[in-house]
Length: 157
Image 1 (cartoon, rainbow, N blue to C red):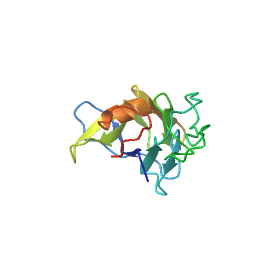
Image 2 (image 1 turned 90 degrees about the vertical axis):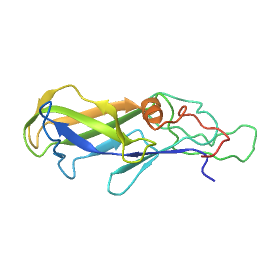
Image 3 (image 1 turned 120 degrees about the vertical axis):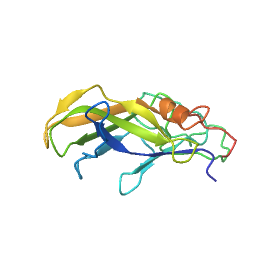
C-alpha cells in the first residue's frame, strides 16, 4: 500500500523578456535529474516516495531507505525515500542561445494551476554548450503541492 507519494510533473520554460511568451528550449536527450525515488521513462514525471519511518541518514544528496526497521515490524516503506532537505536537481542544455531564467513548475491542488517551485537567476546560455541547472528541496516541492511536509507516516492520501 502506498502511504505517501509526491508526483512532480516537470514543465520547463525559458522566459527571455518580462512580457514575452514562454518558449520550450530544452534540448532532447540532455536532461539529467537527481534526488528522486523514481522517474518516468519520458522524464516528465518525478516520483518522490515518502512512506514509512523517518530516514536515519539525511545528507541532502542521496535518497534513503525508510524500510530499515529495528523492531522487525512490517510497515509501508520506500527503499529510495525522499525527505525534506533532499535536493532535487534538474540539468539540461538549450537548443539555441538564450538569455533569461528557467523555471520548474508544479501543478497545484487546483487542477490546471501551476506554481513556481524553482527559478534560476537570469543568465545567457549558449546553444548545445551551456548547462542549465535548477535546484530545490523536497520541502519546497511538498509545500507547493499542498502537503504538510515530506515525511512518512501512517495516514494514506
